[in-house]
Length: 130
Image 1 (tube, rainbow, N blue to C red):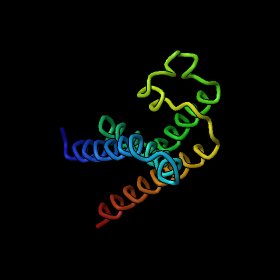
Image 2: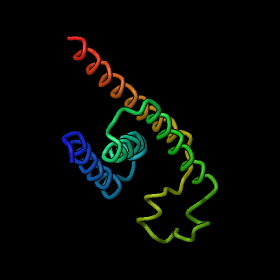
Image 3: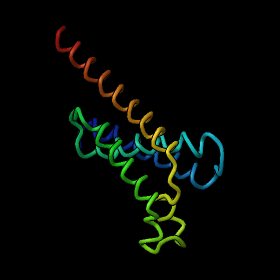
Image 4: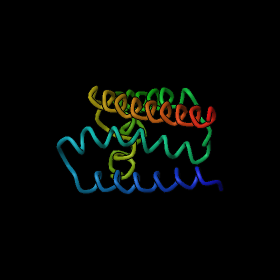
């Protein structure tokens, strides 16, 4: 496993622990309703980068579209369709409440991802010149 993959794995695990902490211990406010949604797309990004560490120009957009799709499935009450509304873990993982503000939070997280990818690309391009 190369160095980048290990870094992505460590970042993924750290964010996963933060997300679990938010899910278990924070029940309202900005951290639960906004920051958690911003971080979840970053969490997905780090998970994907473990397996695909090379630059992928459309990754932030693809993650955003995936998150929006999950949010739309919440609108159609996927948890109830699957019959897992009594399973706290799955209900939390899938989500059970549609909210447009969540989509905005996913967008903010994906913009952060895109900026980081762009900065990483610029840094590599600058070092190649020298």
